[in-house]
Each structure stands twice: as C-alpha cells, then as structure tokens.
Image: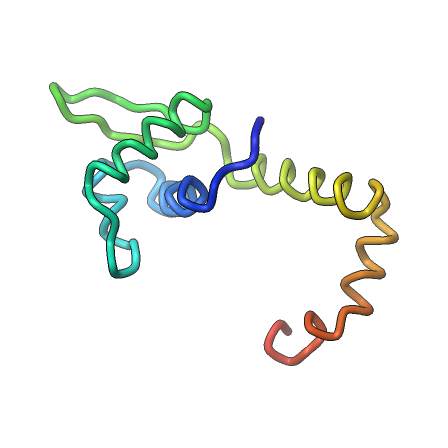
Length: 109
C-alpha cells in the first residue's frame, strides 16, 4: 500500500462515507470551488489502479466503491508515521502528543 495524495484522500474519505457512488455522487459533498467532473473521474481511476477502489459498470457509467477500508488505511498511515517520525516507538509518539502545546489546547479536546 502507498500513501494517498491529498486529492486522493479527499475522494477516499467521501467514498468511505457514501460507500459507493458515481463521480457525480462524489462531487456533491465536495467543498466549493468543486473540481471539474473530469478531474474527479481521473483521480478515481488512479485510485482504482492503486487498488483502493473498484467499480461496477452500467453501460458507459461506473459506480465506484472502496476495496480498502478506512481502518486498513488508517492503520497503514499510523504505522508509517510511527516508523518515520518516532523510531517505531509508541512511547515517543505518546510523549509527543502529551508535550506538544499546540495539540494540548482546548480546541482539540
């Protein structure tokens, strides 16, 4: 598994929420200014090539659905962060969160 780009992750978050949908369905919850239909379609096809998404065909239309769960991806990302930034030490990770003042303010609780 590879990490997703910001645009890919935004689309995956939507697919995880709606569970399945056409490109037009993915566009609905996206914030303004919405990307072009073709842009979203291209990103979804990239996600399919990467093994995150599959589709069911209805003539020329495709209904997309995630084949990697949000939990699977979250575990992958956290392990990658733990290895890359905290020497694979959960203790270092928890110490970081405990001591970082910007994460300990009331807005995150």
